[in-house]
Image 1 (cartoon, rainbow, N blue to C red):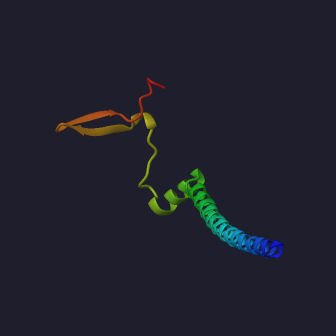
Image 2: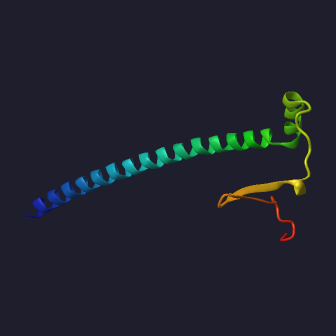
Length: 102
C-alpha cells in the first residue's frame, strides 16, 4: 500500500511539474513576443521623433523656404492672424490668439 501511494505521489508530482513547465514556457514566449514588439515600437518612435525634430527645426524650415519657395513666403506677425468661422450662415472674424487672456 505504501508503495502504491509513493508511486502515485511521484506520478502526480511529475504531471504537475510538466504542466507547470509548459505553462511557464508559454508565458515566457508571450513575454518575449511582447518585449520584441515593444522594442520595435520604441525604435519607430525614436525614428519618428528624430525625423520630426530634424524636419521642423527653424534652420531646416528656412532652408526649405529658400530652396523650394524662394520669394513666395513672407513673415507674418502672429498678432495679425485672424480666425474665420461660419456660425448660422454668418461669417465671424476673430483674433486667432487672444492676447488679453494670457
